[in-house]
Image 1 (cartoon, helix red, strand yellow):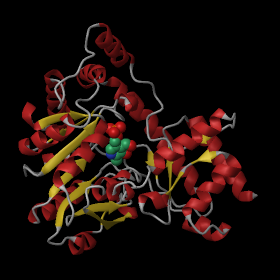
Image 2 (cartoon, protein in one colour):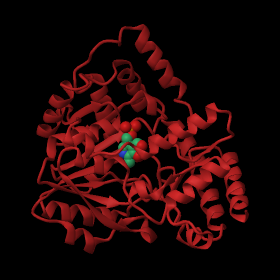
Image 3 (cartoon, protein in one colour):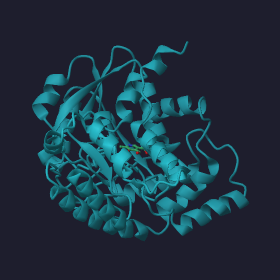
Amino acid sequence: MFTARTTRIQPSATLEMTAKAAELRAKGVDVINLSVGEPDFPTPKNIREAGIFGIENGHTRYTAGSGTPDLKNAIIKKLSRDNNLDFSPKQVMVSCGGKHALYNACQVLFEQGDEVIIFSPYWVSFPDFVSVTGAKPIFVNTNPERQFEPVFNDLEEKITKRTKGIIINSPSNPTGGVWSDDAIKRTLEIAIDNDLWIFSDECYEQLTYDMPFKSSATFSNNSKIITFQSCSKTYAMTGWRIGYTAGDKGLIKAMSKLQSQSTSCPTAISQYAAIEALTGPQDMIETMKAKFKKRRDYFVEALNNIDGITCSSPGGAFYVFPNIEGLMKNYGYDSPSSFSLSLLESEAIVSVSGESFGSNSCIRFSYATSKNELERAIVKIKNFLKK
Ligand code: PLP
């Protein structure tokens, strides 16, 4: 009844868990939601006010399909200020979130017969973006002891004549891993040698805690590197739906054409507010980052104190991805999802099990929630395991 391409994809596991948490909350259950993929801070006041100003002053109509010239200029300024990258307006387009930008790029670049390299564990949406085009996702192993950097032998072995693209995501969802400069450079070298399109999903670029972030495109001027960023996580603007792509002019033109025939344009009001986000005061980022770092340090240590859990300290984003193999063995769970489900049913703690990210040994917790909630979660997990 429905097309083959629709049957090739799965619903987003993370959005499903978010919905489950909301459902339980609506029933009055005292839920601890560690599945959230968004900052728990409000959108800063100056950005909210810019949105209101936009509504009151007529920024409420269709815009150019690829985004307003003013927002494109703000993006160009931001990429130069924060990432040391130079782009012209024809190399930039705005989409309904980074997700839509990544989806559009896959639609424009990949099709049946192509293969696309994805590093595992991966963000839930990457394989679906690829397989909906008819192309095949090819998974490459990573090293959990080294911020989930690529296992390079595996990468080299998995590249074939059919490989057309590779997706880098540092800082990563779900692992929080931040790759070293060397790992990024080596990955780029391999990708460039094989003439691949290189996606650099940098939606967590502002959230690194142990070393400054460097955008992939700063390491090479290869025209097949595509930079994807977003206002969502950086400015606590997930619901405003503004993300952007910067890269090759021809690719941006093709993506803009596709977008003009699908969503017409990203929301005009959000685009107006995003100009304030990108060019207004930036100090809230540091405030948010300092809070996330404290929570990460607390949570990683507390998880490592639980019997059977091993958690390396991720360098960025707001997720931890502990290995729970010991716990599963000690307490008789046959999969991360069975543990995740028990936590939900018994303690009302919402997590996302590793399987949806390509891991049979880990579970994802988000620390985009208050320290108090994290402390409560640790107490509950410990008590639960004692039972
Ligand atoms: N890329 C990664 C790795 C993500 O985790 C997300 C959101 O969770 C996105 C891209 C897209 O975010 P948005 O569409 O809100 O910009």
